[in-house]
Length: 80
Image (cartoon, rainbow, N blue to C red):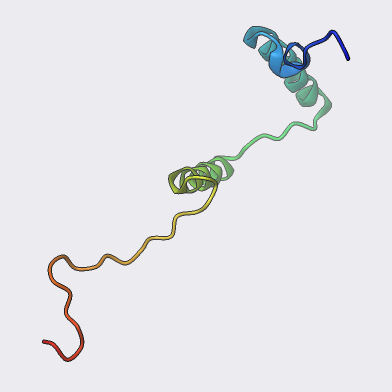
């Protein structure tokens, strides 16, 4: 068995400022190389809309609006 605990290894276990520093270096390198994605305002708008739809549904499902039933006593066919 290893003496190294799993929760003390890797990127996720680093301090937030150290993670930010490393991620920032990767972002700068991608821009210098010309491979970084730059969002257009329309792309950003579409992504935000999609994320909002997902988050409202819970557990990653899109919410489909359900038709609203009228309040009060239900009317059965032939019982009007």
